[in-house]
Length: 496
Ligand code: NAD
Image 1 (tube, rainbow, N blue to C red):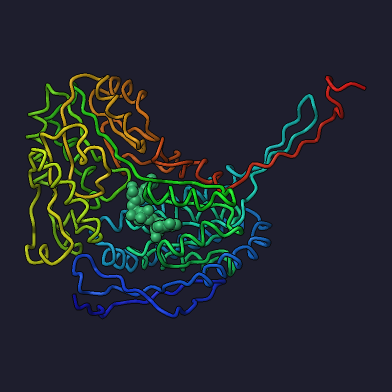
Image 2: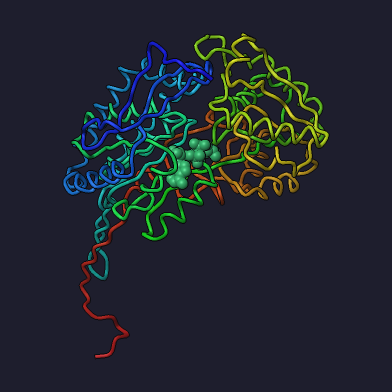
C-alpha cells in the first residue's frame, strides 16, 4: 500500500528532561479512515533513550518530591487550562489518528479533564498526613511518593488513559516516564507535552515504541511503580518482567462486561434501549468497560431483540469521523478488525445468526478504511468464543437466561470482572448487582454512561490489580509511611 503524508501531518519527538530528543528512525501513524494517509510520525525510541528518560526522572524526583501540594496543584490547573484552550486541535488530531468520531474525541478530552480537575481538588485531602495520639504514644501516617512511575497506555483512550496516570502521579510527588501506544501515539504525546510545559524539566518524560521500550520501563531498577492500562496477556509479561525488582503496580486490564436484563425490564423504554446500544457500540466497541455480552430474561428475549435492532438501526450511523451525522467510526487498526471478524466467523460456523446493524453513510469510504459493520449475534452458545473472549470491537452477542442464579453464574465464571450492568426494577437490580464479581456495576445504564471519576475504578480477577479514579486513584501513587513515637519503650510480654 502506497502511503502519503497528510498536509497536516505532524512529527512528535521523545521528551526527555524538558527537551525534544531527535530519534535515529521514526514510524508513521496512518489514518484508519483513509489508511493510505499518514497523520503523523513518532520516534522509535531506543533502549538508551528510554534509560536516559528513566534516569532523568530519578534525578528530578529528588527535588520534585519536596515541593508542596499547593505548588503541584497550581501547575496542574494551569496545564488543564492549556489543554482546554487547545481542545479543538487535540480532538482533530485524536480523531484522525484513532478513527473516533469528533463527538467521541471531545468526550475523551471531557473525561480526561474531569478527572484531572477532580484529582486537583481532592489531592490535598487524599494526601493529608494523619497524626493520631493514642494510649501508646503518637503515630504519624504520611502518604509518600513512590519514585519514578512508568506509565504505559493503550490505544483506545490514549489521552484519558495517559492523564489518568500523569495527574495523580505528579500531584503525589512522583516523576513519570510515559509510553503511549504506537497505535495512537500523537494526541497523547501532544497532551503530555502541554502538561510538561507547566512542570520542571524531567518531571514528565515521554518515550515511544512498542513492547521493546515497554520492557525497559518494566525492568529498569530505577522505576519503582508501573501504571499500566492494556490487555491481560500483556500484563502477564509485565508482571514477569517486573518481578526481579518487585515494583509497585496498578494494572487496568481487559474486560468482558455483561449487561443483564431482568424480567422487570421494560422493552418499550426507548431511552434505555438507546442507552444499551450506545453502551455496546460507542468508540466502535473499543472500550474496556463497554457492555460486551448481553443476557436477557427468556420471557422478554424475543421482544428485546426486536426492539434492540430497531434502536441500533436508529443510532448506528457508520461514516467519516468528521461527519457530524456519524456515530460509529472505523476500527482503530487492521489487527483488531481481523480479530473481531474471526470471532463473528467462529460464531457463524457454530450456527449463530449474525444481523448487521446501522446505516453505512458512505460506502466508498467504508470500503477503503478499517471499517466493520456492527453486528448482533444471536443463537450462540454461552461458551462460544464471541461470548467468553473480549471482542473489543463492533459486535455483540445477546443470549437468553432463565433465572437469576444462572445468569449470576454466567457472569461470575468469566476470567474478567471489570464492570457489569443490571437493568430492571431498581431493588431487584441492586440485589443481583451485589452478587456480581465486578469492580463497578451500573443500574439501568452501562459503560462510560455510568462512570463517576469520584469513585474507584478497576477490576476483579484478570481485569486488573488496584484502582484508578477516586481517592484510591491518588493514593495508589503513594506508599503509606508510618512514623511511630511510642511512649512505652517495652512491651508487657518482654521479660526484664
Ligand atoms: P496492549 O496490551 O496491546 O498495549 C498496551 C500498551 O502496552 C501499549 O502501549 C503497548 O505498546 C505496551 N506493551 C505491549 N507489550 C508490552 C510489554 N511486553 N511490556 C511493556 N509494555 C508493553 O493493549 P491495547 O491493545 O493497546 O489496548 C486494548 C486492551 O486494553 C483491551 O484489552 C482493553 O480492555 C484494555 N483496556 C483496559 C482498560 C481498563 O481501564 N481496565 C482501559 C482501556 C483499555
